[in-house]
Structure formats: C-alpha cells, structure tokens
Length: 265
Image (cartoon, rainbow, N blue to C red; front, top):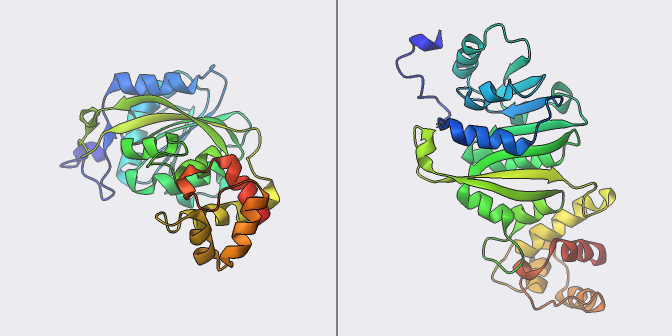
C-alpha cells in the first residue's frame, strides 16, 4: 500500500502536489459548479482538489499518471462511487474514454513540462464547458498576454483563437509539497462558441502563426517568406491589399489579424 512507502512525495514524474487547501477551494469555486455537472480532474495527485470536488459534483473522473498515487487515492476514497480513477497519461487517453459532454467541467494542477500539449488536447476537444487549470506563472502570463507584449506568441494565439482565458489568482510556490522553484497561476478557460478561424482553415491558420513567429526578430514578411518558402513580394502585395503592415513584427498582430493572414496567403 502507498502508505507503507518510505517517501510517497517522491515520484518518477517530479510532481509538485498542491497542499494549500484554501487555494484548492478557490480553484473549485472558480469552476462554478452547480452540483449537477460532471468533472474531469487532470492529475489529482494526493487528492486535495478531489476531496473538495466530491462535495460539489455528482460524478468525478480523475486521470493520474502515477500508479502509486492512484493506489493512494483508492485508499483515501475507498467506497466513493462518484469517483472514477484512470491510471494513465492524460495525453494518451483517447477522447472516447473520457467523460462525454456537453457541460463537462475540467480542473487540474497541470505538470509544468506538458502544459502546452495538455492545453492543445483540451482546446481541440468539444466536450467541456469550462476549465480551471494551474500552470507555471510565466506560462500563465504568456497565455494572458496581448499584441505588443514580449510574452505574446504562439501559445497565446492558440488559446485565444479557441477560448477566453481569465486569471483567477497567483499561487506561491510554498503552497506545494515539495515546493517547486517557481510560482504558479490559476486560469479559467471558457471555450468560444466557435474558433476564430473556420474549421477548414485550421491548418492554414496555425501554419501562418508558426511561420510568423519562426523568426521573431524579423519582420512578419521576412519570417513568413523564409518559413513558408513564399516570395517576399507576394506576401507584401497580399498584406498591402488586406490593409496589413508587412514590415511589422508578428507580436503586433491580433488573433483576428492572423485569421486574415491565413486567408490571404
């Protein structure tokens, strides 16, 4: 049993477990549960969020990568029929094995190393109605950043093109055991009714975004030309016709502007 292990805090995945109950309560409040919605928890760890969620949701589905933590949670919540535990990497779980929508709400203290892949999987999945996620503070600032800021880039555009992101609170590193070397931030995500781009334009939209930021110190014209192998003059003419500045840098363009760029190239 996990309670017999010498140090249950040490895991092969270098996890940092949330230990501050007041922070956990604030995260759950931000999810705005009405007692009827099912919840998906990503990475329950030692169950500080899980315990609170079970008081607010009729069905909790938790995905935990660490078998030792799964064993610990099964001990802690033995007999709790509202809880379904899956021992797996969330990134490897097929959508068909996750709870069905609509109305599903998602919560999780996301592992720093895989925040972006998890967010991309979540954003591409139509079943959820709201998500509250804890991320590294620097990553949170990047997600919330807007055009013209140093943090603004592919991650912000990827999120903003499909969801509304709001800051819930900052979380000090001392709220975790063991304590990480950085502070965290809690975000609430609400999916847009539809992405900024048309479904058939998704590939072109993100190709334009990646190409624009491939060489951040260059103008957007030169970065796109080099990355997408398009003649610079063709890009200049297309930008000018669309009322966009080809000499500006990528970080000055809004999400809506990138939609136009993907349509004119």
